[in-house]
Picture 1 (cartoon, rainbow, N blue to C red):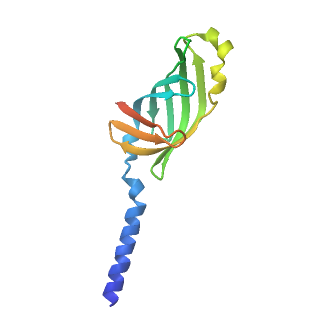
Picture 2 (picture 1 turned 135 degrees about the vertical axis):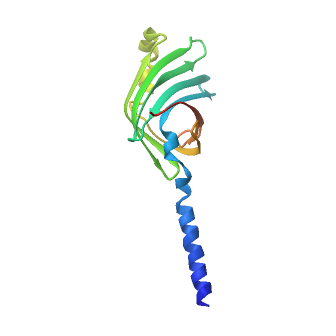
Picture 3 (picture 1 turned 60 degrees about the horizontal axis):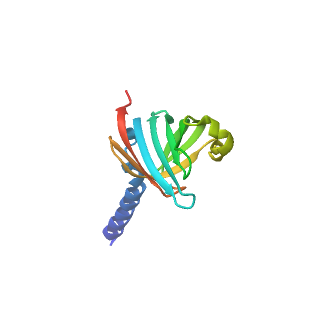
Length: 162
């Protein structure tokens, strides 16, 4: 009888430690390096298409820096392209990649004169705090699902951290 109790307790403890280690199946070392992330989304209400082409360097210190282009296609307007640059802190917690920007710069690089009329920059946040569920993380691919908009974002590794 005591063996059955001990075996049951052992099985319970083993299963609990397996559940606790589920988030450890993410190899954080695969995250380090330079990534290119491209994403397109359509806002049917505003009849606007948004494209993102962004490079981000993620380092083991919990910091990241990135830059890229955010483009808007709005009916009756030329395509608007904004340059983005961002510095962030990051961490992996419970299978989620959490990014908190420390600095975000946005500049209209296609038609700066339209910025006075449209003022799209005022619609963009000054800082971004985002949490995304890690769907896949390998040495060459990062796939996450945003908690804020539900979008799935895929990035490809373009350089390893040296």
